[in-house]
Image (cartoon, rainbow, N blue to C red; front, top):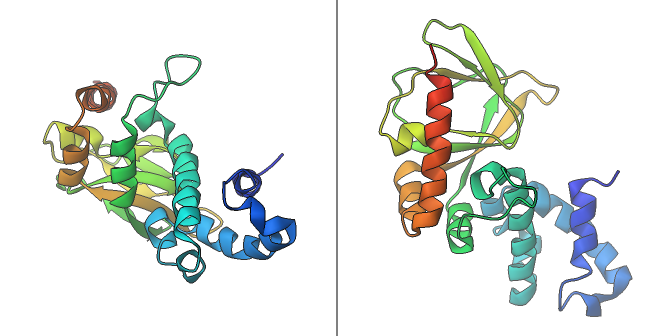
Length: 212
């Protein structure tokens, strides 16, 4: 089975402007592309390999990276209740979100958010898992790679009502993307359909997390 990186490499062959490079040249580029692909979106634009590419290739490679990340966080951007997973969130909003992301690395078993913390950021799990616990530190559930948290706290202006803890793994750390809460709302509020999608996701998660 092909990895996401391998699929990404193959998709480069379809980029206008890359075909003239030839397979030999593309093979030479692959180590640099691999490094850049595994960096977070915002750091990839600062990588030396990326800076040396022509601007049209920069744009198209970043678009491919965004497409990959969109699929990882599909619940945030797509309607998962229908078979074809139609994209709901406006593409301009998605581009703004990814361009505003920061990246955090948390050691295994470290606490990311505690009860009564204010969610100044919205978090997306790039790799690893987050374990959640209630106010009495009773285990609730794990958030997997591609999940996110802080949405309903931000939308409904609520402090954290749970512990969010990095789950131990072989790597010894997890990777989170985060975006400032105000920036997130400013992005989604530019389109009523996109904001309604975020609101509905937040409401459903809030109801699930506050069941007695």
